[in-house]
Amino acid sequence: MSSPEAPREFPRLPVRRFPERTLPLLMQASAARAAGRRFLRFVEPASGEVRELTYGAFAAGAGRAAAALRAQGVGAGTRALLLAENSPEWQMLALGVQLLRAEPAALFASLAAEPAAAIALRVAPAVVFVSGPEQWEKLAPVAGELKRRGLAAVVSRDLLPRNGIPDGVALLALSDVVGPDAPALSGEELARLAAAVAEEDPFLLLFTSGTTGRPKGVRLSQRSIVCALEAGIASVGTTEADAGVHFLPFGHVAGHDQFCLALAQAHELVMIARREDLEAALALRPTYLFSVPLVYERIRGQVEARLAALPRPLEGLARAALAAAERVRLESSAALRDRLLAALADRLVGRALRRRLGGRVRGLFSGGAPAAPGLFRFFESLGLPFVEMYGMSETAGMISSNLYEGPRRAGSVGRISPDHEVRVRAGELQIRGPLLLTGYLDAEDDAEAWTADGFFRTGDLARVDADGFLHVEGRCKNLLVLSSGKKLVPEPIEQVIAATPPFEGAILLGEGHPFVAAAVFVAREEIARLAACGQDAAAALLPRIREALAAFSEFEIPKRLLVIPGAPHEHPGLLTPTL
Image (cartoon, rainbow, N blue to C red; front, side, top):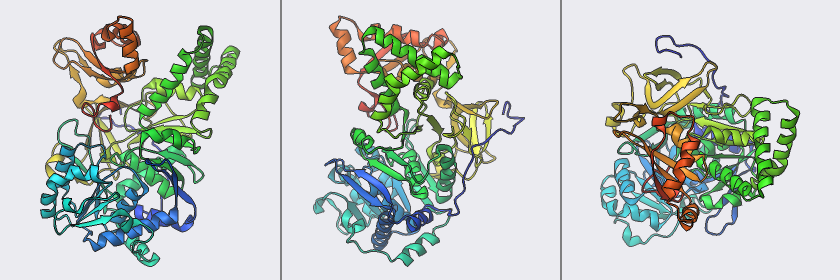
């Protein structure tokens, strides 16, 4: 695809087709062949206890949800809004809504009250599910208007005060909807409902992060999620023997991709609702992790901190061993010295890292945001395959992926799904095919999203290399134009800074100015250490950034820093829920 006028063929991502063409049918198939097999181990956030659920029990819970929601008027043409932290019951309700051919709408549980209420009014749900009073308080100010727009029932995990619910709106306990004592569907009726769901029926309504204005409501069909799973299963190489750690929120399309793949394939998930419970999940010995790059950056950062604490000679030896391991695993070095040092890197670092990840992890899968090439090289050099994927809400999370059992490249997001027809126009990746959304919730959001001939405009600057690997190089709208006329893409620079200790994240600034600056996130302990030495943090850290960015042009290197204490996720007012 060297020019838009002369498209070329290139290798595509392999897919594995499912005979079942909807998620309810995939759930039914897994429950039929593995009814008694463990599907979920959920670490309860309050107690730390681990609750187990089989495939049969999950499907039965989805059937009970369908029965209860149908009694509240949920059916084709209606919606249910889910505003709650991750749990097995969240997905039972979502599948129950899908079984009724209605549309589940997912919000981030971390969403602030004002945007949550505004989105709820746009969704106009027949049923709302909240985890408890904290989430309901976000919607309570508009509860009366929601009732006028069709709200019939509120489902809550924790007790809500009845006086906060509008008259005429039912208040249901979650246990009475999906619990073992709730009215159940017969196996025959559950099968009938699942068979009635069509490929173009709703799968999910998701909302974009809103970085460029009002969040857009992305409507995904059953067709799109099944196509995404068919590409995903080939790229990750999971089998029914796998157990993955699941903690990406259900407000994020990637959280659904992992969950739905496990449900369709019948492999196990260790589910947590809080990042604080990740250690507990790793103690249950998973075989893979799927996460945004930030979590892997933290893992690497902890290794770096341990290396820095070693006596100077031993630290130097360990770093030399890691560099040699990169040459052996990524550059096929056969030098005896490199092979000996690579073995030492495994003894000093690799074994301890694998133990920390539970002892059985065979691969790390990354999506939701760009991963710095250095992150790929770090884990790959230690024998842990690092598989980066790329997608967006509008494509059910799948555009391209590297392969667990196949070629992987640092800085690339892999090969493109054959379900996408692709082209590049003025640097922008444009796609067409069955993975795409059926449309946006509000018609005005469709206006600029599509070309005249039906291609979806991703808004991403991209190129396909000679071997068919896709490289995403930034957002079209993120391009910074300096007052000098110089143009730069901020993402690669931000990634390099974020991968350089002690920085935990960076945002490049400079539109319309003569030079660029950077807002950088730095651990409070490091800022305090610099202050104790009488140093200004911005002045002390700027040389480290200049050194890390030595390969970039001078106009791309920040001249000033704004130092923000802490990690990016600690500043929800500055960043979206997907960081």
